[in-house]
Image (cartoon, rainbow, N blue to C red; front, side, top):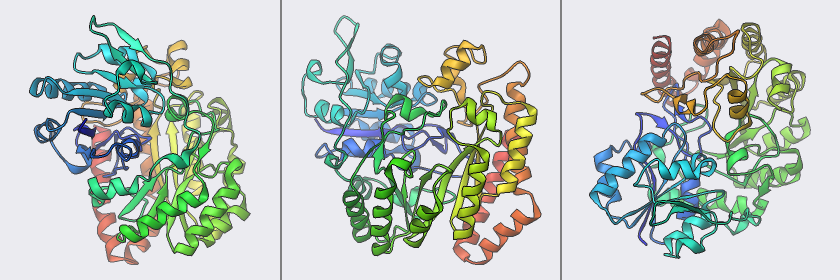
Length: 475
């Protein structure tokens, strides 16, 4: 079947793609690559990936394109599901015979509810859905496809046997050729990465058990299955040769620096050093100095680090597997080596109080990552955090649909007897102001801008967007 893999139109600036852990409109313009759609697209000859939000394609234009296909597979998330389902309904009105399927954590967790929510949705693919999508596109009978849930003629929902986890990750084709073919790479911005950048996964799953983290608990699993170092280096070499404008590679694995994986990390780093590529990755704040040095000596520029909180009890509550003293030492090691850090923090996790919020702000200021992102605790269905929140009355069941507002901006979903949603919500702008509006941090940013005209233009644009975000957040 002629197949379209679609990130449907959504809120202006909303990045709900599977490559995004933060399914909301960000403080500044940011878009991750739709890697989880590009992967099955690489396995379906003649298919196309359309990322409507990143390309600023509206509903009417997207409908016109989608109607040219026989099969449309959309990635959906809990916040975007209502608008994604509505898009499917409009598409079915335009072309009644078209087949529409959904993939993503939302439908993996609730396949029955997702199918029953809209008559337009023909099937959903659970678990890892790459081969499921491929087999649907090949026209196989639904009854023969593992990992598929679909409607029977009488309206009942049928769930096929689960699809086995992919073990040999090297069997999957490269995603970069799909990016080059179908996407406008200049549309993908991340504030802390060089532009243009390319991100992809070198493995799936995460051994960490963080209670809030969505993908390991729903799609990827807690076993870290990796591509060989040679396979990863080969894709980066392809990017270097075929996408010469790319200035940075971002490895988007949940924890690229997993301690079980460090020899492979060293091998990849040395390979990238020989290619002369600049790169970044997600890391836990516990990487040994010796490994950091090997990575830095071979092109590592920045680490994206989830600190989450400056309070050790909260880190214990969320099963982070980390203490603040270890995080401090790691951060100092990075500073000594000249590795930049984009630090992420979450407000409103179990155990949060006004005092722990203050503690986290002071912790962030003291370790001083180059840039930060502050999020609100998001209890996605399928996570331990969601179950805890419902069981303890911090969240009404099914209220997770209210993770973002009508403009796609993240809301505080959890409230506690001693700490309201409103207090958690407004602590975000306090955090940002107290971190960024310090003379030392302002001078750090100004120095960075003065060193490069390109960075000057970029930071000025981001500054305007950031102040708009703060004003909207205060309203």
